[in-house]
Amino acid sequence: MHIHIFWDSLSPAGLQMPVTRTISSIIGMPATVSENPVRMMGYVDGRKQIDAQVLLDSIQAYKHRHRMKEPLLLVVHQDLFKNGNSFVFGLARQSVGAAVVSTARLSNEYYGRDGNDDDLIDRITKEGAHEVGHLLGLEHCSDKECIMFKPDTLDELDRKKKMFCTTCREHLAAHLISD
Ligand SMILES: [Zn+2]
Ligand SMILES: [Zn+2]
Image 1 (cartoon, rainbow, N blue to C red):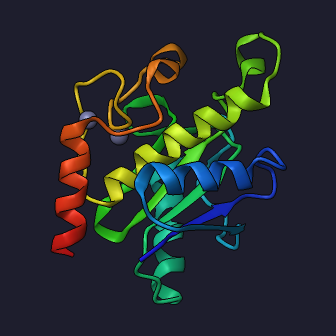
Image 2 (image 1 turned 120 degrees about the horizontal axis):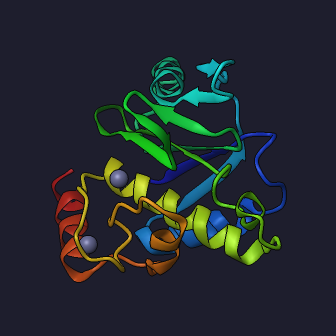
């Protein structure tokens, strides 16, 4: 089994290799990255955001068409929302192994600070590994430093470490064996 990462053409260029490598080492599973072939659906003009559920439908359709069973993570630059939330950093649909993360709110520039590629790589990696964790059967975790902690703010995201806590790591191992 390995993780597929699709990188949208408008996502930050040049960061796909370090992000892919680090997600692979956090999860402990090989990962590959390629240009995104999935149709970008769900853009809502009035909000200038993408409805993450609609985009997940599109990813699901792609996976079905290509009989792709392995976990798939799409990285996009557009801001995402879902019903009832003004925004989401990312969203996973565990039943079909499909997830999406947005880089829109992960850059320092978004918050009026100086840009820094290392910060951006760290955040995309943490968000990406979090959503892939869901695809591999993990739920949210109350440990603020664990990848599976659900951050509501950038500071909470930055406080997380690039690793699972012991409990989540054990759950992950158990899920991977039972598959
Ligand atoms: Zn989550
Ligand atoms: Zn945990």
